[in-house]
Length: 222
Ligand code: DHB
Ligand code: MG
Image (cartoon, protein in one colour):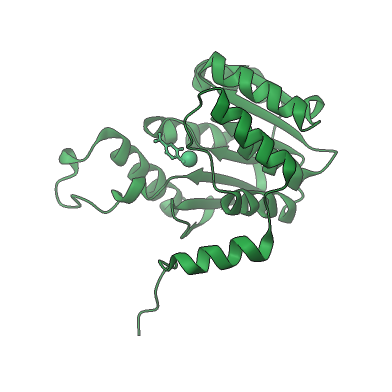
């Protein structure tokens, strides 16, 4: 029998949400501030945020890189998972988004644990290479850039470190046009490339957690 992968029943999500009660007053305020500032509501759900927190905790992460800061919501989970000794290096292409995130990190009382970089991540990542190797790289930015962000992560993660990508089901499109790749959007092709590169790399043990969005997680093993 082929068991199902993930849970489509929304009642299951409701159950876990009310069970875990992840979103506290700080997270609610951050969400509200981001919305009021006009940011798109594309941040992680609080349950996916908890996944990030748990993963950071499990590996004792102290140095995490995030590509795609948005309003800082996901960064707060990464910081919670790292605890007071942790540091978040977070990259955002939009100066106005980064400003909102800066206010939110202050509001949450963690701004002293965060270094923010504004502009194209591929240009700015080089600025932190000397601070590595890193424990965790979380990628949640322009989907077309995922393969290149992964290349940087491969070079700059410690053994045992994690690379995590959000939205790796390509909003339901990851399986489309399997026979006619050229007909898929560049972002879908890039996400497929990201997943298959990690899946085939001898340097990573990889899975995809079947969240609503798809959360690819690779552990660097060599
Ligand atoms: C979009 C981007 C994301 O990273 C996400 O989690 C959801 C939506 C978007 O660009 O629409
Ligand atoms: Mg995302």
